[in-house]
Length: 477
Image (cartoon, rainbow, N blue to C red):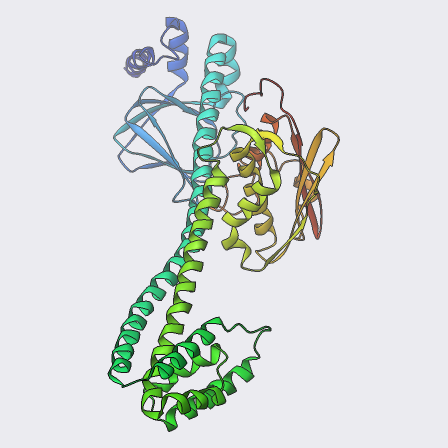
């Protein structure tokens, strides 16, 4: 009775395996042997069948349903899924030793799994199965690399976007505040002008007020003003205004003080226009000065926004031919502008540019990716506090750009691996290990290379590039 049940199970599993492309053309004997070695398990929706750290010892065939694997400690990371008809798990010649995440069933699922101890006999009995499973493993590696590369790009884009949003928000908010204040100043100057018009002013008095206003607007301190001296000046002006009952002296005194106005100048104005007029005159003059200052703030803020937008366009080489003669120094400076939000935390940039460095024939936007990855890594290595050293040098028909930092350095035992795909020393969610790999591939695409020299307090990444590219640039690996 038990033999009949086993025979029926094997026959049913053989029929299931015939429906899967990897096994569909195998002989009945080959399928029968596999079915006899496979172990079937059933999973309910949500049931866990793999946990982080579990040894990878099973080749798994999804007969029905769907499973998903989520990397441990990375809830925002990619989810790998497999559906009915797919082969997954441990494959022949794989370097996988332990699972790094949690695997669970999404739907009612039926699996067939084969222990790796059976692999030598399987490959001997069914030689063609080895090539097929290796092809599946290669496809899986490519798909994993594609997902991780895309994730790395999105993470980099997210970091740049967040930094740029912060950089753009500051001048935008400043311009918005200045606009609100400008509206109030315009109302004040209008009201003061109306009150002045009601006074029976002589042409000489009007000219005196206008001259005072023009001179105050043109004032520029030849040297930075001592804060204590400025405070004393404002206090003297405030006292003078209070004695004459000028409204809101605390608003007017700082404006007049910034313009370099002194109390004797105010006394002369009061003597020429009269005590009844001087209050409205000073309110109007202070409002006009405020308007000028606010306009300058708006100009500076909008220029900062315009400069950032221009830097973004230059960084991506928007609306430009991809392969062209590129100014490496300009590209590095644009990258520093884009990463400005990270430099402000305590990074000092030291430049040592070769003034005779020629333009390089290259894909400018891709070179900027190299500078971004190297500079960003240097800032991380220094904990955002230290010296970022950038040097360029001409060497016959090639150029060298060196980006270094005074961080703790890269341990000798891992220096040979830092350019490997997926290798990272950052914590989960902080890096995917593709930044340096991407930089290395871009350098090779340009027939160049990247090397690292590191010791405690002095880490330098050196990018070597030809000035001219061959007629047909090599494709990226």
